Amino acid sequence: MSGLAEIQAVGDDAAAPAAEQGDIAQLAPGVFLSDLQLQRSADGQHLLILCDEEAVAIYGPMGPSVAVVEFADGGRFTVESLLDLLAD
Image (cartoon, rainbow, N blue to C red; front, side):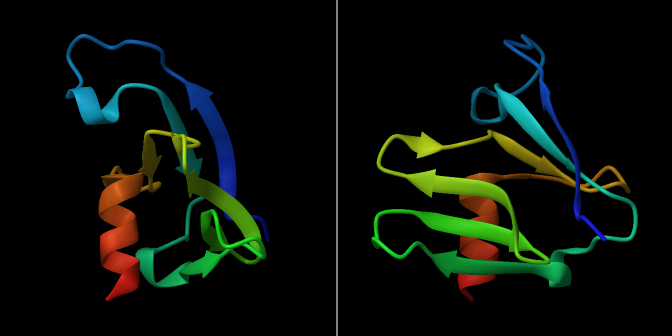
């Protein structure tokens, strides 16, 4: 089962906070925070947020690959906040 439903390009939504502007990775129904894992890339330059070994988001020297990860229940997290939660 793939945890990633789709990545949606939302562009500049004036109503969204600045940290949430950009692409959104929408997770499939039944995927929860506890299903996500944090892993460092082999070269050590990127942090990967994974679900079932599939990359949901990547954080590297140029910032995150997506701005927001959204769960099917509507819960939304910036990549930075997910990194903090998963690192604990």
